[in-house]
Length: 407
Length: 81
Ligand SMILES: [Mg+2]
Image 1 (tube, rainbow over the protein chains, first blue to last red):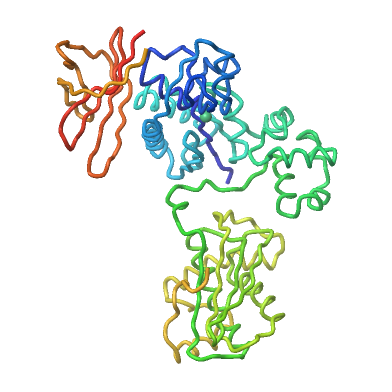
Image 2: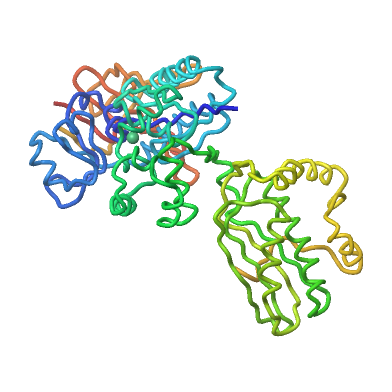
């Protein structure tokens, strides 16, 4: 299903909040931050001040030169934080998935909350109205609507202040070809320079540039990402605050009741740990890109390997395969007592459909396997490898969750 | 012209269904009528919760503060042209 994503950006935020609080500042060039005439910098400028060419991060004395009547205000952090809380509360009435992107920006996943582009526009206007009603008439925002976060963010940038822009299939390419490469969130000065070095100076050129060459220049992950940007593709998910507050990594470790050199046994434990880790990732709708396999020896020294993959994974067998690769190449210097896996570099699971048929079948099966396991207990349905493990498990105590021994 | 003030004031306040609106306040021996509450925000300081009311009338802006722990009002700021 096509998604509907809103990106909402409050206009000249801190300055607008000040103008909301004090009506005598409205219509005047004001700036927040910095003492008048000092070497400190501007934190925020009102719409009126921006007309004089005053920008965020500009030194105060320079701003004063551009606009001698400029009014300077001390930043009042709690005022802005509170106002942010107020507009987030409003956003949460419109969607269950609200991602706070910064103090004055948020993404809303509106999929399922609006039937079509028109109803999306109506919702956006309703949000603007509620902000005016509940917070104040001077607080305006620019709302960008599109099928993904990348385009929604571009759309909100296109009309300021008080904008409402929809990017859909009809105008997508036209919009993409009219922007500069560094208008994309994620293309900074250094990437821009590297793109220019290979002759890619526009979004259009980036779209026509062979993906293999991009991969060679920027690596498989970022190379593909650049290509996706040029086509307006983005499958990143709107992460709500609750999801974000969750753990930054997921790990499982197990201490054997005895020391062992037996790789077969170690691998069986590893498979079980991968299964547990994978299940937790899937349960939390996350996938990870950095895997860490670690083990502790009988003498309490420890060792491990860390890999960062090109793509995010959360399939237990996939995790296990990586561990197997590493362990089979590794010669154990002494007997192993503890085995562990940690998955970090987490992102919401976007559930990209695998390209290959066999993978696809497994991919589609995984949620069902988890359901059965959830209902009938851990490891009711398990890979054949694991069968022997239940015997091992009976012999020894329970599995320990996580591990504090390694970090 | 901004003025930083930190002085106790007496306030007449209306308590409506879901908000409270200061209507008048006395500062020194002058009485001020409030025409508009422009922004309300709060800050927690330990157990204490402070409510700030940014209000205005035809010629002045004021920032009032209600301290829920001490149960008293202060005038924090004023601005007039
Ligand atoms: Mg903004």
